[in-house]
Image 1 (spheres, rainbow, N blue to C red):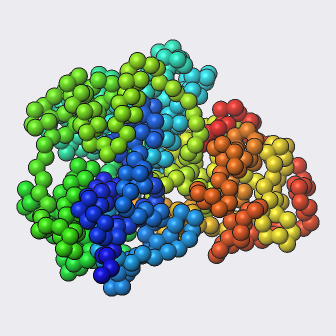
Image 2 (image 1 turned 90 degrees about the horizontal axis):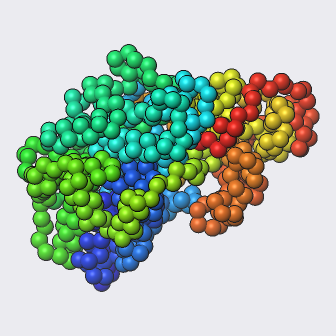
Image 3 (image 1 turned 180 degrees about the vertical axis):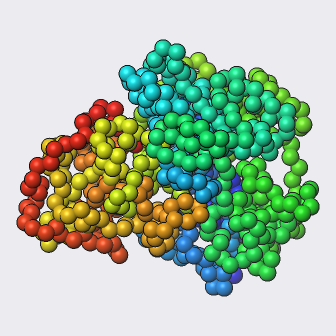
Length: 622
């Protein structure tokens, strides 16, 4: 008799716990497959410490292959689920399509950034749901402080050192608390103008910080933030975001280059395509985490609306604590449905307390209902995280010890660019790569309110700085249909690109959306923000809007070099299609050759006077 096939979608708190528990319960009597876009489990509660330079990125990740040896890992993202045939169709990281059959399906796809219809937020803000976003924020904050320290303009210095965080829940509160400490430590090495210090603002429409927690914990967190210098404004949010700053709901305009969006999360859009009963975007399940009428389908974590038996009529909140416990119950019930375990169990959970890390030795905690603050709360918080992590405990503890006795390293690695971590994305755990949409004519591609674009150049607003999305110029060889990148030296001489305005600027699909099998986005905007593949998205490599030429200052390293792109047919993807060495892209528009003669390697005739002045502050910016 063949072994039953169990398929788990997602390796977050719920999916990882499901796979680990099922592996123990089945003991080889079932085929367990885990579909996930990355090869690691991410311990999200410690992500603010990655952004603040306390922990290295790998400390908060756990290898799926190493920790789940009896589980088959398939890298990819689910496109479509055929419930009647028991088949899931997915797309791998290199664009390959595949399908997986199952006898039991566990949906644990997690959540994505929650968007609100606020003008400019989707273009100028960044979320905080994945490792790429944390790495980007650390680089960005470091860069802003360094640029402010070298600036002679008090106004520009103040704008660069103003950091706005929207959302005073767990994530926003911890980001603001750690961020203030991080920048204060940085300015001790790079002093700002006399009388100036970094300013962090925490905004929320709620009446108090951490509104979902006990009032005593909320008061403790509020007091620590204010003592540290964070500008806490409750009952206030963002009305509009621009490249120069944000307009608050009380009418004040705050000049800033940083807007961190932590207003909450929404379930992964995958579950909406099933056509099953939903509750505020989450799939309705019974107390056993099973979808009614679908005995083969289970759901847990943020995508599942699980009845809260301790509070009848409500559903368990979308928190990591509940997702971790969902996973255990889901695994036990899946095994029971296959006759590989005991009886089914309903999900019940009684909170044993909460912890909020406020940086340094400060924290707020209430283990077993006992309210703690200061050093005792800090010790309880770090002890809880070490106990909850499924791996890397020794490395995390070592980093904490080193941070206590040594100064932090504040350097820009430049590994994640602004355009590769858009707020409006269905895959916050995966950074976009070159090969996405080209710059739309007449659109503004600034990312982050001044995320080192317009303010770092003296050029007109529609002319991006070097190394920014939209900065590349291309030449097209007659009849070739392939855009050829112009060298940075030619660009610096002010030579125009060949071809009329708008030629060859077709709408291209990003790699992340191609992987999900979704059609190219339309130009219309939705209630959740602008459509994808519009200005502000990711530029196509070596297309108009690409990064500067490789092996040049500000550009990407050469392929097969440390930090460069992987070689073709190596893990990490293939080179962008329609590029030198790549295969022709599928279903992509071919740029039309410009009118008139043009030869390879030569710019179109007619010098153009430069209106921008090269500025060292723009180099290396994301």
